[in-house]
Length: 249
Picture 1: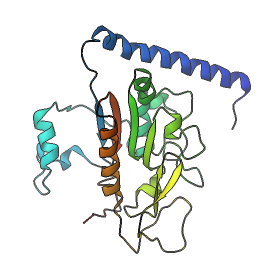
Picture 2: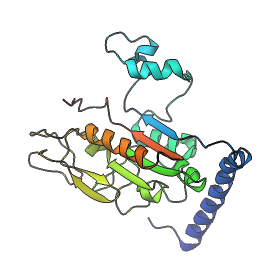
Picture 3: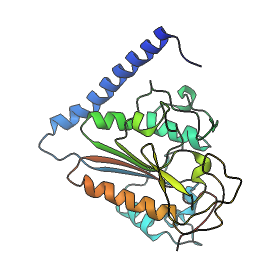
């Protein structure tokens, strides 16, 4: 339902106030260290991956050497918990920094024809804060917080560039017929989903040629290359290892 005009105005003003405060909190230490380069940030999110699925935490069936190396050379946060037990609320908590109890997105409620309940515009996302601090902001992968034409679309939530899946059902298909670049559909060569097709792009392909995550990896590398002089923030939200459990070549 559409908010009353006065309430919308208050929400926008509150949003601008929070963005200004948050941006100041980020910019102040950066300004104090103006002689030092601002670090580039790559946040990689795996989907349905438990900490016990990684070799660094004792898993011995499937090797995860690259992730284990990242853990070995960096810091392991052993009390870093997901914001929720399901997808959209977890991602919303990550983007806004809000506790789930204060969050607008509390479930995977779908909105037709594609995607989930949009993240309301009055929220301040980490992408908006970093953008105000001078970062180029990009999202590659699965979003799940608003589709084309909604206030929750990534381009309306602080991301300069988006490539990937907007809706969760679409993201469960590793051989989709299309992905999105910002608001435009990008066909993936050779993939075919049998009838009846759903408008959200979901389903399981009967002809598998182009593996979505090969394309996503290329897009992520291209974004890094375009902004290698930094600073940049890349949110790389992969669907692996969530079902449909389809591997590439």
